[in-house]
Image (cartoon, rainbow, N blue to C red; front, side):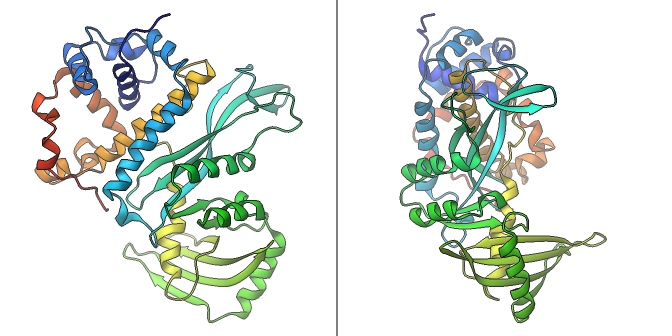
Length: 397
């Protein structure tokens, strides 16, 4: 198939398909087939198309587009946000808090491609793909993709499969290459508390806050418990505005290979509920003046790396290159949605942020789809001088 449609129109069609959470590629022609939608896509793309894109044409394009090109597009969007300093207020001690975690991407009952990961499940074998994701997380609930590394069996004859820990150095290299001077603090789960990961952090000049679990490093766990009992002065109590009570304890300079890490424990009690304990290993200095901030402004944010209501597991394409491109387009759509939802334009006129107006973030796609199908974005909104007349701020709540 020869594709003659303009690339901006094609990419915008795919992004809006994902933004509107239509759920299937074939709905591109049904849900977007209106005069207003066509006009909006043309105005956004700077094109003059006479019809909305067919889903097969879009698929054919994404089979050919190089994955690195969409990585570059996403990178340029993040770079713009960094240069605008739009999220600087959410940094922690000047560092961008970056949560890293693996997420399921696609799963199949039969082999999807030579790069599939496999897992025995009783008398059958599951075939699946995963992605190791690095996301910039903020205290107001945003999670913006900085880098993605597909976990895949590059060599089908290899004796061991690819995994999170193997993919981490590749992701770290991509992150460092893209953002060589950006101060970063990694938020990691307990799997990553090991010397090779700490070596990568030291070489890159990154801080880290890693979940500390007994089963991952039993010897260090015993040592921590012993030192915690001896260092009774390393304590602080904290009552939060929402009624939560926290008991904080810490121990400095536990050895992990050639590294020295500090361990912070937070026992949190909510009214009417059983206490919950969190522990982290970090290279941030710990003392009575810093432990509350490390726990609440950084350590507790790792859970925010989530798909924000997007269907990561939906197979928009069977072809592996197209599937990777759809995944990256989904990260772009997620970034756009979060900037809109946390933006202040509606708050200025209605006194409320978007989630309060539409009844929740998950309804955003349906409202957006209906609006674009029936209402043309006015031409004056595309005036190059328009951005100079307004200022969009992001919610800090």
